[in-house]
Length: 149
Image 1 (cartoon, rainbow, N blue to C red):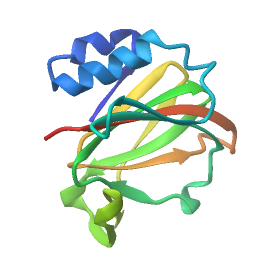
Image 2: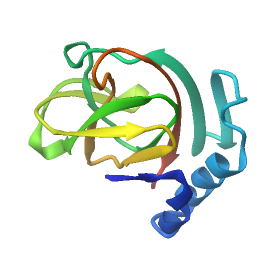
Image 3: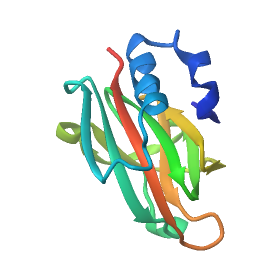
Image 4: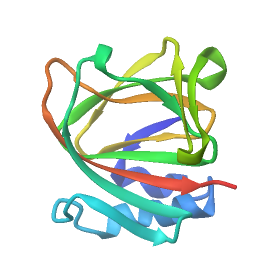
């Protein structure tokens, strides 16, 4: 798991070649102007989903992890709490392999991801995005899915 400001993204280019492509997209595009939707960067190996939603109370959110994809969750507007723990510290309660997601029960560390910052969650990282910091608020976020095979 990595948390940082987008301006520092090039520091992580060496982690995986596709992460470099993902960060380049975030740095080179006017994300504020992009409408909600899915945008391909490298076919199904790297793509971004622009989302707008209201953050939720923690009891209305679920801990998740992925089988193959790494998530880069970049907050364009607003801020949200994300919960993180290692997947091995959790219990699987639902698997959706066809959607590359599993839902888990467990405890984790709470992170506040502010506007202009990102969190990277690798397949071993269980995470719970979309949690409100103090009260629900509108958020615009880019979630980049990166296949790290």
